[in-house]
Every structure is written in structure tokens, then in C-alpha cells.
Length: 151
Image (cartoon, rainbow, N blue to C red; front, side):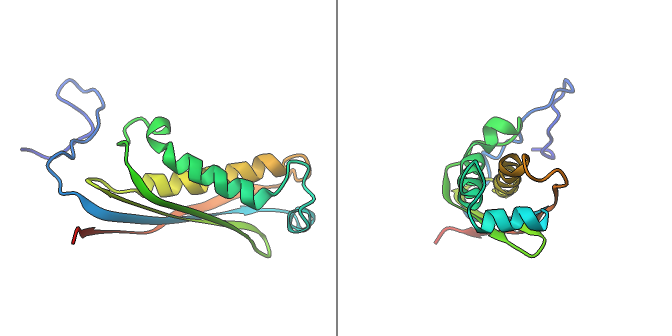
């Protein structure tokens, strides 16, 4: 069997065939940041945003997004996730979001971890856009990934 590719013989995109790969414990961690004004940070901290508890809603949105990654990213495999943890915390400059995703599968969960962070940050943006016109989302990155054989 040759090199796996996302392009088939006709030049069309396709999913990578992972059928011959072993099922392994897989984990990925990602993080990202949204820069906010001091006033917005204060309103989030005091839970005074009109749309509700920004950090909790963002965490739930991130979890939902990680579970829907295959529906959002066309060539991603559908995975049975065993854990999704998304945490949003206030910082001096805004909110940092961290995600941890696990599964037992034949392909990694990097896209699920990154999608969870991205949607959590977008949720914060949506919930704060009425009071902060200078928000900036950035620094979204994969922090690490692991895979290990099943015991």
C-alpha cells in the first residue's frame, strides 16, 4: 500500500484510510486567547454580561464543538470521544481557553481540541461584542498530542 493521501487518483479530495492503523489511546491539548478591554474583563468577572455567564457558556460551546468536529471539517473522521474538557479562565489581558480531548481510535484528536478552543473563543466574542469593539482572537495552537497502545 502506498503513501496515504487526501487526493485520490482522479484528483478529488478524500478522507485518509486509517483502517489498517491500530486502535490506540489518543489525546490532544490546545489553547487560545481572546484579548479584551479591562471593562469587559470586569463585566465577565462580575457576571454582568447581558447574555449570561460568559466563561461557562464558552466552555459548554467548546465541548459541543469538539463533539461536532467531523461535521464542521470536511475530511475529519468521526470519532467516539471519551473525554472533552474545555476550561476558560480570565487573565490580565482577556480570556485563555484550554482544551483536552481523548479517544480510543485509529486517528488523533488534534482537530477536536483545536475546534473546541476556537468555538469557545468565538462564543466569548459573540457574548461580549455589544460592549467591546476591540476584541482580538489569537494564539490558537496545539499544545501537544499523545498516543499509546491499549493495555
